[in-house]
Image (tube, rainbow, N blue to C red; front, side, top):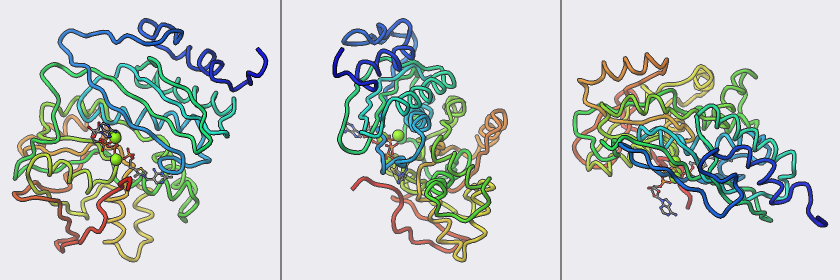
Length: 329
Ligand SMILES: Nc1ncnc2c1ncn2[C@@H]1O[C@H](COP(=O)(O)OP(=O)(O)OP(=O)(O)O)[C@@H](O)[C@H]1O
Ligand SMILES: Cc1ncc(C[n+]2csc(CCOP(=O)(O)O)c2C)c(N)n1
Ligand SMILES: [Mg+2]
Ligand SMILES: [Mg+2]
Ligand SMILES: [Mg+2]
């Protein structure tokens, strides 16, 4: 057909996205809708996050990793609620820089993570924008009808726990921008965490029996803990010296002259996509055992207290946190 270029809307859908469609429920991406099945004994759980060039990913990030980041930030929300992922609706707002090779790379990233996480594409929308590229996914999964742990059950005396390490996403952005002076291997490890965070799906399911409140860390550990504290009607304190750091983050930390400011950066930088939760101290052994089983680091970083808000200390000294995390203002 005249006037249809190689990166056209319907070529993209037919050649790149249709092969990723759910074999039973997406009608080959040739109709107006998809149909969600039901699953006896389970609730359908939905979440949506968007990512924008220049805001969530860098203009020169490879498009396969952009697609993976999109799926993973959404899967991270399902992980926090102990869900088994099922599939997603995808919106692509391509910018003029997204030609056919970039769209192919994007679809390859989707294919890799569909396999990794056992999900399928259900449908979506494809548009062109004169502005920066952006993408969004509506991720769907299943949670047992017994219900997921909310953000609202933390009680004074409970511990505050976090999976993995904190600050790699934040440092990874700086590494990808060429703003850090570290060994190449360290820079790559950090940038990888920024571009391809790992949603903690298995641990999210494993802790549903123990956590009293849970969410994933996207905006920053302190800001996100404040959401748990607000929803639970409690206060929480974080001991910054307990923050779990990767080898690369340790290497960066050792170059800092102000350790307190450096820890504040890690605790408020966001892009972690780790699980943050509270639990009764009596359950710590079970939580550790489940983490060990999954070869996942688990760290107690603080305590739930009576009151409101989140406070931080460094080696016993109060730290005034100026900006607890990322906000779109
Ligand atoms: N435009 C919107 N319309 C309806 N609900 C919204 C809208 N934006 C956010 N929400 C809802 O507000 C709540 C908080 O959203 P938020 O995006 O902060 O959560 P999150 O995805 O856990 O965090 P993050 O986006 O930092 O990963 C969620 O329940 C979300 O569905
Ligand atoms: C290029 C670039 N600049 C800054 C950041 C940092 N950042 C942006 S949004 C966000 C919170 C999570 O997003 P949301 O709340 O929208 O889900 C964070 C930590 C980044 N990732 N990339
Ligand atoms: Mg969100
Ligand atoms: Mg989210
Ligand atoms: Mg946010």
